[in-house]
Picture (cartoon, rainbow, N blue to C red):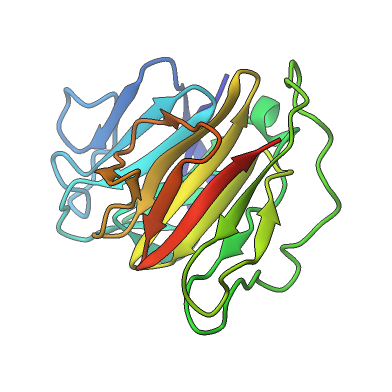
Length: 219
């Protein structure tokens, strides 16, 4: 079960198990995780859980919410990530999920084509428990990288243009799902906007994000 470990100056002050779909953080006493400090807003941030995926979202706080030192509005958490609110550090621990996760690959849409950050491309992950065994890929249909394919061999593959529109494709036992992760421009699936709730993908579905069209291909 995922949990958050709250510490200040290296001293752990509380551990909170994430058992609900929505866990609130803030200075007010009605929050699920109460941080009594003037640098923390009354309703500072919220943790949203969907299956094994947990997202942190800043609630327009005064001093902001930081993830691994970078200010974020909404971001998916990986095992070992540290959320920073004021002087408090909140470490996210999800050891069960981390066993199947590799470092997320970013597919940047633009003139550079499909580019993965240094060190992001790794050997294919072992099939997730209960995996259906089907293979799938994302095929770019427009732009400079048209015709290129990226195999969906990882548990989570992130596609899009950071800061503009990013979506995450997650491999589940029953197939593949896609959800909006970050960016003001929501990606679309067959012309319909995608929200934070995962949507099942079918062979031939067309995704569009950051001005680039991609097709989901399942074999």
